[in-house]
Image 1: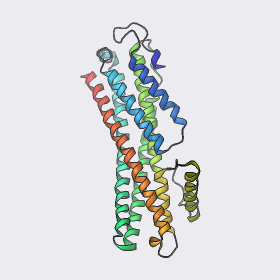
Image 2 (image 1 turned 90 degrees about the vertical axis):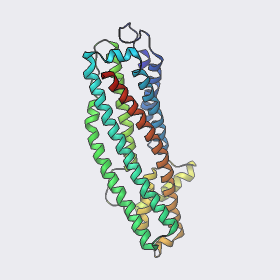
Image 3 (image 1 turned 45 degrees about the vertical axis):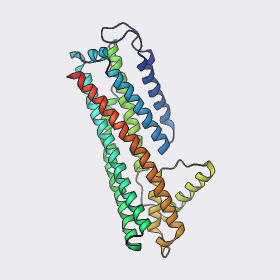
Image 4 (image 1 turned 90 degrees about the horizontal axis):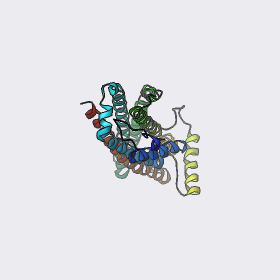
Length: 294
């Protein structure tokens, strides 16, 4: 574990384990342990918080003069370059996540506003619903592309550990592990936003069963762990596919849609704040790596 690293005396790093190493170890262990948990907005929000703490520890470690001296050595520049490349790719993934959240939020808020004002009557509302569903398909397409691009980064992060018997190599291996766990969380995040893998267009009854199951789980457990993105999509798909006359004036249908859209809005707000904070922290870490080479 990280807490046991850097025992030997070195010209580049302290001879005793730095307290930051124990903190890094703790954060990594917490994130690894959470990989087996079911994906929910609550769990993802928690992982984003832990990731911020993890990258804060990394940044503090990179600011240590002895760490900078060790990584700045000519024979370690290639490792630092690889870490910089990984950090840039992670920032691109984080940006893709932010874009997906922002796009969905904009259409969600516009749809909620249309429902409140009933602007354009039934036809106007139907148009906004279809705009939202179309935007979700576009966002999911972009996410699918981003997930495909992640395969190259996963290979980068899964390189075999360097074993040269020195503390700098141990540090590089640890920083690679940080990038790997960050990638894992962001990948899970993107998958959560897009929902399950695209299947054939859901039938009327499959949408009904999904919504009914959601209510049953919520009532039995007191709170739901369902995916807010998926539930909002299902409610709107059900609405546009419903054959009931005057469906947009049906109180139960509209109440269900408004409820899921509100839950989605709250979910996005929370995840958006966590993503923005993580992005800023990752930028700061990248700047610290760049300063080491300059």
